[in-house]
Every structure is written in structure tokens, then in C-alpha cells.
Image (cartoon, rainbow, N blue to C red; front, side):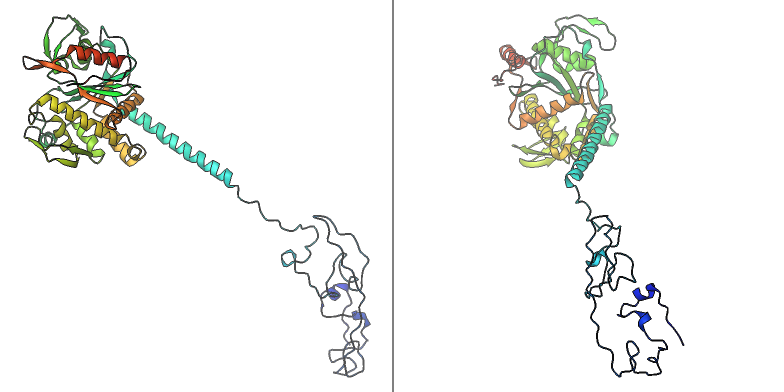
Length: 442
């Protein structure tokens, strides 16, 4: 005879049994008890199963507070064989399915709460800081890289007997025919020739003023007086001998310092900064920008400069741009016509270089700076901010915010152009006092 154990754990693990196992009669076997295979329930000798018994109602304990222990309840009928506070749910037809199934969670385990929503404001703030730091780092790195490339070789402290400072910032911009760093093939391509040394091919004064910017070209054939000066290399003082010559001869004689001294002496206008670029640097900047768009009003050709242009809008590459600004023999007023073309082109160049598309695009900015800074020569006090102001002032002129003109002339002397003294004095006074320029070159 086999007797099942009556331990309470077995009662809890047989959910389909509704009776206490120790109520079953002795002698029950897996054949129904007493050898009757038809026996059901409590071993009744009847042929049919015993009817359903009415169970006592057991009230479920209240859900415990969060993290608390449920109060002890009197044991009901089916609680006698289970752990305290446990309700099998059989009296109500419910079965515990855990917290995720909607039932009562186990003791000591609070319901799982959803995580906090992402703090998008904080994430946006952190992202903005990261981007700002990256931009600042790139900007600072670019500044120091570009600053190290600039050739500060002109010492304006060597210039003597200087005029008083005015209200505007004035630049003397020089285009030289320096062939420094050019190969024989590049010289041939750009029609520069093989002349040794360097001379000024173009000169202009740029005045950056609050009342409007003014660009004044100085014809290289201008008749000027060479004043007393201190030699840039020897340190020796040379007296004023009343010698008159072409303006570009001052540069050829003793370089940028004497050129600045001569311009200041003959105009009465103080020059704050000096900037010079050679043939190669000029052409490379244009190519780095992808060319400069120009509207050429009348076509012209010049074998010496290599110019061959038709009228209309067109984009000039470095070679064509250099030919455009150097051509003089194709025009009746050779020097004056050339200076007008130089002004026009430099304004267009600055307008296309000083744009967000160039400044904010490292793939354009770095090649452009690298192409020009190696051959750009400035004075020792000129910063990159001064250089940027110079370019934006030229850009403003091309946009109509300013005036471009030649130095007013009144005739010639020995083939050299003589300046109109009255107009020059009025022009200089207006620039010094930051007044709107009303003087014309006509």
C-alpha cells in the first residue's frame, strides 16, 4: 500500500486538487482505491464523482504599500498550506502572473518604474558647446597658422618726417613684378620675362573710413620729388636734392620704406600699413579661388602681357588675371587705363574672396591663404585683422560703398604725369578728416 506524503508543500504544488490529502481513505491506490477503477474523489464507492463542495470565502489581503510588508491575515482554507500573505487565487479563479502580468508583485520588490525621459535641452546644450569649442579651436589654429605665413619685412619706423595721423586707416597696396620662386616654365606661361630684381607694377592708396572707403590709384609714371630719407639697409641719411622722377623709381632705389616716404612727402597723407604681392602670389590666389568673374566692357589684346579678351562676362584664371592687370600698351591712356583695370579687378577679387563660402569653407580658405601668404609682404605692425579689414574695405568699394579713382592729374612733364595739387590737397583733407570724398579725377 502506497501513501502520498501530506507535507504542506505538496498541497501548494497540486493546484488542481481541492481537498486535503489526509482526508483520502487508507488503501487508495492509483487504481481508484479498494481495487475499484471507477473510484473518484475521497474513495467513495459510488460510480460517479463526488459533487462539488462549497468552499469558504477567503478575502485577499490588501496590496502592501510600496516597499512595505503586507499585514498578516487569518489563514483561510487554502492558506493553511501556503506561505503567510500568499493567496493562490484558486477561490476566485485568479492565478498570480507576476508584476508584468497584472498580478500582485512579490514581497519586497516594488513595481518597475519607467526611466526618466531624455533631457533634450541638456543634450542640445552639450552638443552646442562641443561644436563651439571645435569651431574656436579651428579658428584659433587657422589664425596662428596664417599669422606665421605672413612676411613682415617692411619697417615703417625707418620712415622719417611723417605726416600726422588721420581719422581713417590707410594702406599702400603694391603689386610688384617680383619673379621670386617662379620656374622658367611659369615665367614663360605668365609672360613675366626674366628681369632680375623687382619693381612696382601697380600702386594704390586704400583709405578705410567710416564715411566710406576710397581707393586711389597712383600711376607708376607719376612725377614726384624724392625727399630726404634714411637708407633701409645702410641706415645712412640721404638729403633732399630736389630730384624729380617717376614714382616707381623710389621703390627701385631703396625699396618699400623709400616708396612710403615718397608717397607721404608728395601727398601729405600718412600711410598706416603697407602690403605687397608679387606676380606668382597674385596668380596663385586667383587659381585657389577657382577664378574671378569679370565683366570686360571692351575686348583687347596685348602681346607683351599675353592679354586676349573679348567683351562680356567671363571668369579669369590666374594667368588671364595677371595679363588683365598688367596690360598697358593696348590703351591710348596706357597707365591710367591700366590702373582702372587694376582697381576693378582687385575689388572683384576681394568681393569673391571675402565671402562666407570662402571664409567658412576650409577646402577653399586654406588653399587661398596658402597661395597668397607666402608671397605677401607687409609692414611689421600689420596684423591679420588689419589685413582682413583691408580686404573687406576693397570689397565694400566693389559693392558701391565707396569711391575708386586715379590720382587727379593736370598734365605731364617729360613724359611723367603731373598731379593736380589743388585736387590732391582737397582729397587728402577729406580722407584725413573722415569726410565723404567728393573729389574726382576728371
